[in-house]
Amino acid sequence: MPPTILKIGGSVLTEKTDTPTPKPSAIKRCAAEIASYHPSADNPLILIHGAGSFGHPQAKKHDSPDGFTNSGIIEIHRSVTLLNELVINALIKNNVPAATVHPFGCTVAEDARISEMHTAPIALMLARGIVPVLHGDVVMDRTLGASIISGDQIVPYLAALFGASRIGFGTAVDGVIADGRVVPEITPGTFEAVRSHIHGSEGTDVTGGMLGKVRELLGIDIDSYIFSAVKPGMIAGFLSGEEPGTRITKKPQSISLRK
Ligand SMILES: Nc1ncnc2c1ncn2[C@@H]1O[C@H](COP(=O)(O)OP(=O)(O)O)[C@@H](O)[C@H]1O
Ligand SMILES: [Mg+2]
Image 1 (cartoon, protein in one colour):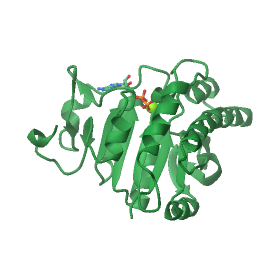
Image 2 (tube, protein in one colour; image 1 turned 90 degrees about the vertical axis):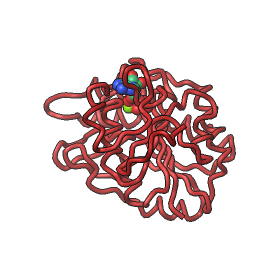
Image 3 (cartoon, rainbow, N blue to C red; image 1 turned 30 degrees about the horizontal axis):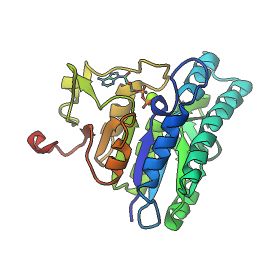
Image 4 (cartoon, rainbow, N blue to C red; image 1 turned 90 degrees about the horizontal axis):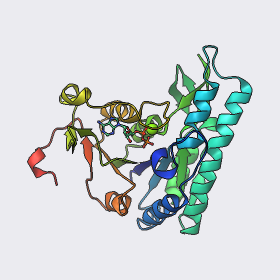
């Protein structure tokens, strides 16, 4: 059974300010919505969360032409693990069998792209119904020493590897917005036309904001949905089969059929 992959943005779980500031009520609500899906071996789920104010300001602070220092690497990693702990605790409280897989310990990058990840534990967890929880992280990098790997980049990597059935990106906005409206569908063919409307993040985000997300998702063959995870019920709706927000796809579908 191929897994569903859900990414929840750091902008949903934290205030994207310059100091680590969680949003406890949002973390709790997201966990409850995930619990309503009842992830199991028959309903496998991989969860990835962003770093928000537990990662981006720290990465920005330590950014230098010479790369990250060891103390910088450790500070960034330790900070994102604190947010991960809050997420895991909330999931466990909702009886979701969730376990952390820190990218730092199982991933190697080259030029800030994932080149290898030890995913055998993830496959075995899924087969047992455990929900692996990954997150944006700093990882060792063969070219740069260390680099930031966003949750947005981890999603397509795992989706291609595991042949994900569905991909959802819960974020702080209703989808990709152009001229004040949610764009229902983006394909490689229509991307250029909407490209000028898509930018980075309004918060502190070192990994490309909305443009980074769309670029990552256009590269894979599996349909994905970018939707609001700030609005209650949207995560649960996506997990139960709804197609919210903006669909990113290589197979154009009739837009008139979209809700
Ligand atoms: N065309 C667009 N439509 C929607 N959001 C956009 C667009 N262009 C830029 N953005 C910004 O990108 C943000 C989403 O990216 P980001 O902050 O990285 O979210 P996340 O925390 O989910 O990774 C939005 O909140 C918004 O500030
Ligand atoms: Mg982001």
